[in-house]
Figure (cartoon, rainbow, N blue to C red):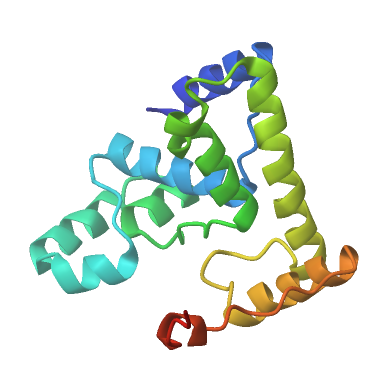
Length: 173
């Protein structure tokens, strides 16, 4: 998809009232991928180019950059120097709601879907307020523990962690 198609797709989504919330990093990354294809190459991250591509391919990419019509974004796209954006917890949640939860929502009415999503959105927003909109690779056990403790304190109850001794304790008659 080229930039014009992306523009019109975004405009149509906005007209239909659909959420279009791409971060500037994601827009830049998608543009770079499209520009690499427009110049005649597949977009590959720079480390991958260095490790996997033959030297002739790298030289061909460098030759292309000598063209006067090549822009800075074209150069970054051909060389793969634009980092792919990392998914945040909100991005992951939107992906889950929009694409991965089809099985859960397929038999729900529109009102049920709104309520289903609202409870999950509230939990994600509480997590973000407490820990920040972390990228998925930044989330650690300490964040889960922090959220667990906050949740218990917020509602006046802290449920103890499950004890596995019940699984091995003898059954008394």
